[in-house]
Image 1 (cartoon, one colour):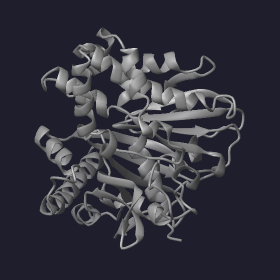
Image 2 (tube, one colour):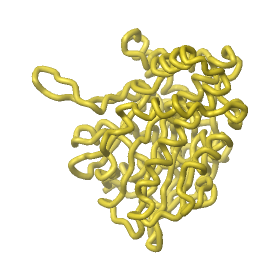
Image 3 (cartoon, rainbow, N blue to C red):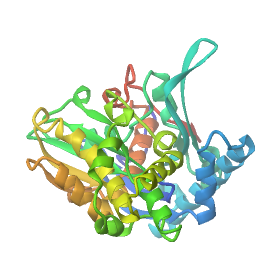
Length: 391
């Protein structure tokens, strides 16, 4: 095991998610006096330029992306991650010598949890870019990244990974909790009352902000990239008949473990739904309201399954979707009245920073050579140490 000089260590966690908004960077002090816990020292988000967001989005299309674009953007995103790390260090008034490591999720451009056959062998794959060697070189700090591939090698889906830290930090003996993160994709972690690792349920419920953002852009002719505070959806009316059809999507009926991404619910699917709504003569506000209800209902229906069996009392929400008031209203409407719904801020986890903090903790556990996946969530056949290290 690699030991540090002190029992408290400072880690920078980096996250860039499926919403393609930019880079989240969290400076986290990790303590292990009695159990694993953290103190958030500083957090900042660094938005991608419009051009950069479009370039990354285009790279997520395997039909059109070119290998030289992936290669060059892998290095360039590494530079952007390094720049974000140096900026939060400066903001937190810390030097590189005070940072134990940087832990970067990278930017997912392809995630394929369902196997395809190559020479008679079934192969799953995932690809996150933002080279950790570049980050380590430009910051002078040991950098850990590329977490998902090891879980896949062990038979898992490489996702979701954040439930590991949900379990370590937020399980309760007295009652159960559900933690929901609404980024481009929504995922849920069910922590039953008094749960052990094998009892945790966690998976992607389906689209988060991804379809809502695409519809907002189409409804406003590109003026808005997201529905701020859910204002457009609030003006519309949910088309219940169309919503019922949308809920028939095969993904929502898959058994767990399951994970998804832009490959299933991204731009192509959003454009298909938009054209479908046009044929049904649904107006723009109602379109946005209905896909907002889709995200809300697919989250709530999953949580409702476990309210009794897991003794759920609290539902905590994080991610960009936390700030969409209409979305939260819909989630509360569709959820059983037996649970309390609030933001993760209520348990000391800033909603925007949750995933960056989680990857700081995952990187720390990798550095300590400790297993850091949750097979109950990913479907892996055993616990493994995820992450690769660039010293």
